[in-house]
Image (cartoon, rainbow, N blue to C red; front, top):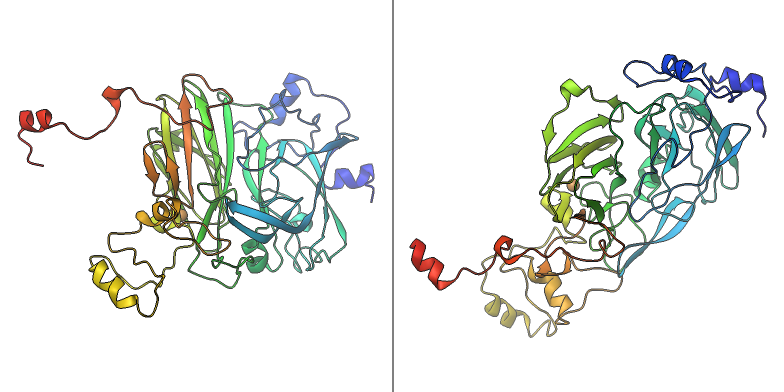
Length: 439
Ligand SMILES: [Cu+2]
C-alpha cells in the first residue's frame, strides 16, 4: 500500500521536503518541549547524530529504513520460544522472534510507517500506548480498527508529536495476548534536547507471568498468583546487568504492562530523580529525589541519576514475592516447625521428600545448586544464583547496576571487589571485647 502526499498531509505527517533551519526548529518546538507543531516537517532523526541509542538489556531495537523521508518499520506478531532464565523456557507470543517485542526508537517529529504482519493463529492489533495518534491509528480492535486476521498485514502511519517513553501492546483479546508477552517499549528522543544528554540510556519493561513448573505455556487465565516476574521478559539470574562509569549520567526508562500489579522499583546506592511519565516530562519544579519509583501497571516512569559510587547495586521490585520465581503460594506454613520430626513422618509415604522452609526459603536455591535436590523439568530455583560472597537469595524482578571507575567488556560479567576496610565481615573477638558486645 502506498500513501499519496495528500494523505500524508491529512494525517498531519508531512514528508520531509527540506531540512529546517535552527530558527524554524526552535519555533516548531513548544517551550515545554512536549509537542512539535504537526504541520512542520523534519528530516528523520539519525542514531548517533540526533540521539544516543537506547539500550534494551536482554532485548533488541527494531530496525527501520527510510523511504521518502518516512521511517518504515515492520512488526511481526508471532509465536516465540523464549527463555526466562537458564532452565526455564516457554512458548510465548511476541514480535519479530523476541519476547517482548523489539524497542521502537525514533525522534520527535519523525513520521513513522509501521507495517504489522500477523503470523499468530489469532487476530490481533497494536496500540501505541501514550502516543498522540489519530483515532484511526489507536489500535483498539473493533473500536478504532478491524482486527488484523492471521496472515494479514496492516498499515499504521503517524507523526511523533511528543518525546519520551511509551509502549506498544496488543489491544485485541488483551488479557490473553498481553499475558502471552505481546508488549514492547517505544522511545521517542527529543528533537531539541533541553537538558544534559544521558551517557547511558536503558529501557526495562516489567511484566508478570503464570507458568506452572514443568509446563511450557504461560497461563493467561491467572488473575492474582503470578509466579514469574520479569524485567524485559527475563527473571534473575537471567537478567543482564546495567553498567555505568562513575560520573556518567544514567537514564532508566521503566514500562509496566503487568496484568495486575504495580511495581515499586528500588535502586541501592544511588539517588535518582523521576523525570517523566508516559504523559510527558515532569516540570523541574515538581521533580523529586527518590530511591524507589512506583511504576503502575499501564504506565512508564523515567528516572535519571549520576553514577557516583562504584559497586554492584541491586535494583529490584520491592514487593518481596516479586523477587521469587515459581514459588508455590499455597504452601502450608512450616516456619519454626521441627524439620526432623516432619521429615520422619513423611518418609514412609514420600521417601525422596526433603522438608524445606522451616527456616525460610533462602536455602532452596542453595540446595539445588549443591545437587541435594532437583527442580522439576523446565523450572528454576525460586530464588537466586551463586554470587561472589555466597548465594544471592533473590530471583524474579531483580537486576544489578554495576558502577565502575572504568567500564570495559568485562564489567557486566564481573563482580565488584571492595577493599577490606569497606567490606562487611565477621566481627573479631578483639572488636567485640573493645566495644562490650556479647555475641
Ligand atoms: Cu513488583
